[in-house]
Length: 170
Image (cartoon, rainbow, N blue to C red):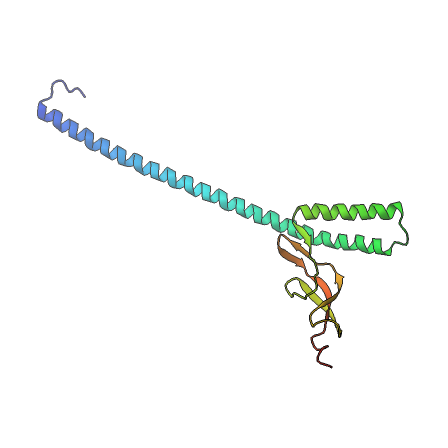
């Protein structure tokens, strides 16, 4: 459109029309920018959730593997206890057991320290005995090791505890 032959009023009218159109285009640009920011934030949130989900699944898989491998450690310990003499094979089995435990420990597996006092959160009483020298709920013996994985009890330690009624018989 040529503006050379237009009157001043027509030029002002054309300029106002262009400003109106420019305002509409700026509004559209702002809408698109807002939409782009929203979509970017949605995508970042989605990625975070997916990363969290992936980490949860990985931890769950590691936990399940650790649980399964605890049984392998138990069997290796039983084999070592049953060995009559210290042979190269026995030493090798002991080294494999230690290596397996160290690998699992690096991933978050820990042996539950039995301690002296029964704690139902980390211990399972498999037997009670009367014992006059110890207070009730004192641990007398560990029957089977307990394990934790990243602060979660995988298997409670199985223990023998002093019977609560053993001191009442005086």
